[in-house]
Length: 313
Ligand code: NDP
Image (cartoon, rainbow, N blue to C red):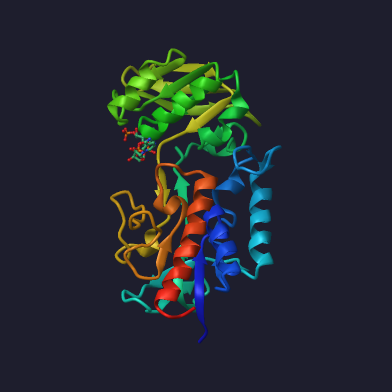
């Protein structure tokens, strides 16, 4: 059976950037797209903060272009996903991966760029209005609500950071925290409470997002008093955490308590020799397309160096 030099799992900016670099280094990468080809950016409309697009670019277009760029240098992109891996634990060992069709793949190096999935509340009205004013990324989409009233859900560091970010752009930010306290660090909480245009509501949950095609308002409920209130907003940001897509690596790769893959020092090297992690699957702090692309590049360079060290290139 053919042994691939580099197998890449995941087709977001990290995976495709790793593919561009690996292909140009003659590693003949094969990339499995995963269940959401193009990754999280395909659920975004306009991407305005990726360098090199002065007029912005819509997320799906950018991902098609990244795929084309990876293919131009010989990356083989396969639509499909990996269901199981058996990782070698010694330098030079061969890693095994199994596709959704049951095919077994052998690879000398593996680049994991399976990303993370934003958590949503699960309300039907929230799901219906995703892309119509409901977003899980304030840094990506906040700009579109300049001068408008928006709301954000969550009480962690992400929600606190995004609320203060939105407060600089929007006229008013209503922040909904389901408990009577925030989970965010004290420093972040102070930033929220010291920002005059953030209306902080504790013990508050959303009953329904209002609007037909686009978000027009919010019906929220105080879970301590039972009081129900409707407010007009045009954007709703969900910031209740992300789930890294690492289930198939459990027990084989080191992860933190939330399931993010751990890498060594400044590299993308995991605890298994020849296995590298790039993008949101190993980054819960920055989570930007450009940082994911940067670590994708690093993973390909790390893979190339590793193959040289074990005498395979
Ligand atoms: P967290 O898991 O820390 O917080 C999630 C928040 O969402 C909690 O307040 C939680 O409420 C709330 N929540 C969860 N489910 C629901 C729901 N169904 N309805 C309403 N609220 C809900 O996630 P974060 O993304 O904030 O942070 C992830 C990690 O990244 C953390 O370790 C954080 O410290 C780190 N981080 C660090 C940053 C920095 O240092 N600059 C910036 C951003 C993140 P409850 O408390 O009630 O469970």
